[in-house]
Length: 286
Image (cartoon, rainbow, N blue to C red; front, side, top):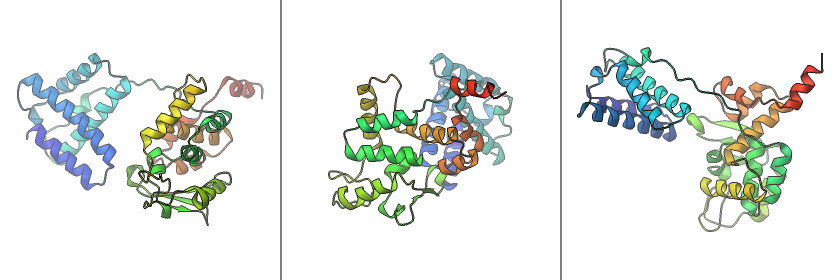
C-alpha cells in the first residue's frame, strides 16, 4: 500500500473515533511532512512496506538539522508510532518499524506560572473590562482558553455555581464549580454589562458577538510588558497558575486533575513546583 493511502486511512480513523480537530490537524501535519521527506528521499511515491527503521531515523535526523526542539521531534515520533500501530493492527503493513526506534530524550523544564499576587497585579493592569473578566475566569477555573471563549450562556449555571464544559479537549465533558470570588463577577457581568447582541456566547462583544483567543493573548502580553515583566504571559500560563496555586495550598492532586480535565495524573504532576523557600522550610522540619 502507498504511504499516502495509508495516511488517508489513518486520518479517517481519527475522525471516526472522534479525535479533536486539533489532534487531527497535528497528526496530519506531521505525517504530511514525513511523506514529503520520503518522496524526496526516493524521488517518488513511497510504499508503506518498503519503509525501514533507517528511514525513520533519517527523518528524525532531518528534523534535528532544522533546529527543531527535542519536544517537537519527540511529538513527531509519537505521531509516527501511532500511525504504524494503526497500520500494523489493521494489516496495512507487515511490520511496525517504529518499534526499533529509540525514544527521544526531552528535558523537562519548569513550567512558567504566576503567583497569586502577580495575577492580581496583572488583572488590575488590564484596561479592557471583558478581557479582565475572562482572565479572572481563567485563573479561578483553570479552563483552557478555547473552553472559556466557547462557553455558551446555557453552560454557565449561576444558580448552582457550576460551569459545564461541553466537548472539551479529547471530546470530554466536565463540570467546574464556580468559586465564591468569581460568582459575583459573572453575575454582575450577565445582569448589567453583557451587551444586548444576537449571540449565545457567554463572553460576547458588541461587534462580533464573541472574543478570539489571539486577541486575549495579545492583551495579556501587552499588559505584562507594560508592567515591565520579562516572563511571557498567555492564557495558558493562567491555567498553569491555577493548578500550581491549588497544589501549593495543599489541594489533592487528584482533585486538580479532575478540575483541569486531565486523563492522566502524570500530566497534572508537572504543576508541582518547589521554590527555594519551600525547600528551605522542608529541610528545617527535621
